[in-house]
Amino acid sequence: MSSDAELDAKLTELLRLMVSRLPSNKTLPTAIVQQLLRAKYGDTYSEAYVASHLTFISDTIMKLMIEKEKAAAGVTANGGASEEEDEDDSSTSDENDSDEGDSEEDEEEDGVSGSDNDDDFDSDEDDDDDDDDDDDDDDDDDDDDNTEEPKRKKTREEVVEGIAVKEQQGPSDPSSATSVAERCKAMAECLRKLSYRVRGPTAEESLEEYLQNFLSAEFEKHGMDPNKYSKSDIKRYRIRREVDLLQQDGASLSLDRRNRAGRGFGDVTLSKEAGGSVTRATPSSAAASVRKTSMFLDD
Image (cartoon, rainbow, N blue to C red; front, side):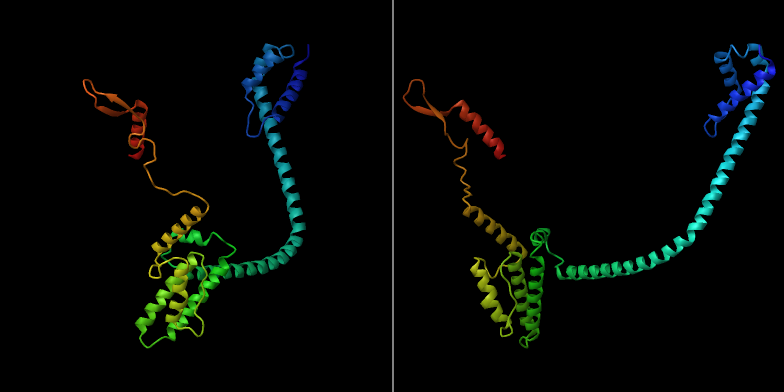
């Protein structure tokens, strides 16, 4: 049988292995070690040895834990020093690269900020050009054809500018010139929203001539009333145009409800009353069920 000194040395190495495998911030209880020695190493360590070496096990675990912490602290310190040296070596090159990169980034940011400011300015102009009280439907219809939007915007600006110039060059009565100019703008906007051809007044035309010879003529050409050009009228014109297109494609828009199932007595049976020759028309059960269903749907 091994002596106590040999058993102490073996137990110390076993405890060192256990401590080395412990996770960080974990301790090894003495009771757990005693239980392990009794269960797994009972042939090597007797019950009397395990019971008498409680203090030895506790002190050895404490000693090994301290050694482990010191070793870990030394590794951390060495690693931190090496990292600092690497950082010092690369700091000069990084500073040079960062200086060059900063100058390039500043130039790029200046260019980007300049373009952003230009975009913001352009968007502000676009918002000012649009009417504040336009409906969402009109805005959606204006954005349907993105390829033609710049052209439409340019046309609108030309029309508005032309009308404004003619308004300033108009007659001495400012109220009449303003009313005619406003009507020209509204009618031109109506034509534009309906995707019809629009132009501004020429240099030789007055506002009255532009109104009569072009705007009113365009309204009559497309079957519209020259005196109706409000937003509600624009919606009505658009709906009517869609209906015309559907009818051209062969769609039926008949609203005759007499042909619907369940209307009238489409399916009746004749029955004679008792004691007489008078016949009475009564709906069949199938017709009655159809009629009830139709009334339910109408409600």
